[in-house]
Image (cartoon, rainbow, N blue to C red; front, side, top):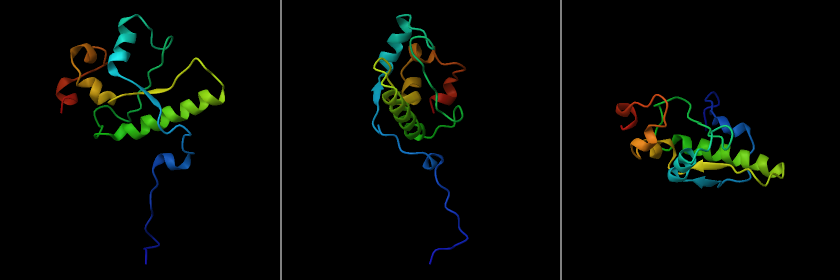
Length: 119
């Protein structure tokens, strides 16, 4: 018999409905870098949302579920609004892939510390 006094903590997202789009599109780091290099302005031409809870405390794959879920929810909203010009995508390989891709990528990271990110 299960211990009735034991509590089962649900993940934070369990109180919300699952996104209808559970597999949002992605953008590669090369494509995102191209946006920066061609003069596209964050906040005007695109919005980049960082969903890490704390810098540097990111176990492998930990934001993948959060990022995919949030992108799915936002895609649901876009679809509900019948907006045909906006897209919600995830960064393929995430921030870890970005931080390990070389100088041209890490130069765009605020407060980048190589000894921390290259662990």
